[in-house]
Length: 279
Ligand code: SAM
Image (cartoon, rainbow, N blue to C red; front, side, top):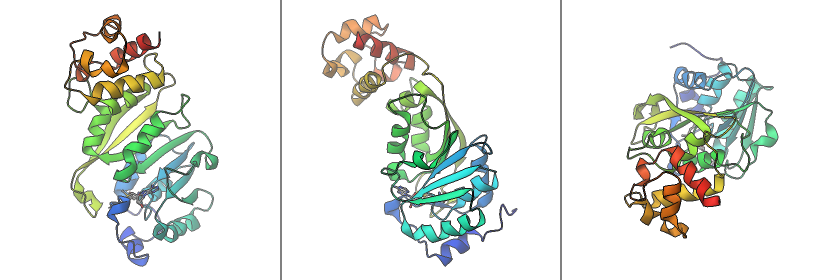
């Protein structure tokens, strides 16, 4: 195994700073720096970008991003115990790493970042989906970021990249694929982490498109999709009743059979329906 930097191995960092992993913070650490460097390489052009990292923990992915040449990394960590370990990395890269202690759900990191911005994270499982949905549904598009390179439980990664007709297809797939390209770029077994989680993980790479793939009002599309998949086994004419009005006519106008089910409708169909509903 080759050294990616002059800092101590992560096992030593964890021992020195007594960073026993806490389940409540979704802590499953990556200790293999060659693997974190490999994840960093999935992010794309790093040299000309600021990278926002959520949950750096003891700093494995942070070090991967820096070793792979990130212009700057801004890392937001909630666990105070990790801050001294991260400050040791700052000491090696004073111009290139900034650590913010706090909750990623509360902090506005854009104040500390300069465009172009990419986001990379081995996300805490308990807030991963919430952060992703926030990043995918800002008031204006394109968003503040160019790409997201995110570790999820494999099952969540499959929901983000799912195609119509599959069990995994739903709200996350539509929100992600409406305004981004989304691909699984790496798969990791539980043993890649310390402690190992119960399930496998995968890295998803999303690139923000300049324009959504099909026109639609974002709020209406979100409402239609949430309602349709709330009762995914029902025919759409029943599942979408909560939207009120002449839903069968609207479905037909959008080119969708009222007897069809949400999981068979492609993104284009949901966008057409969202347009019908704002008329
Ligand atoms: N990036 C490290 C790695 O790959 O080894 C740690 C990943 S671990 C899965 C998730 C990290 O997110 C932990 O360091 C945890 O303390 C941090 N975290 C959990 N909740 C957070 C929150 N709300 N805001 C910021 N960081 C959080």
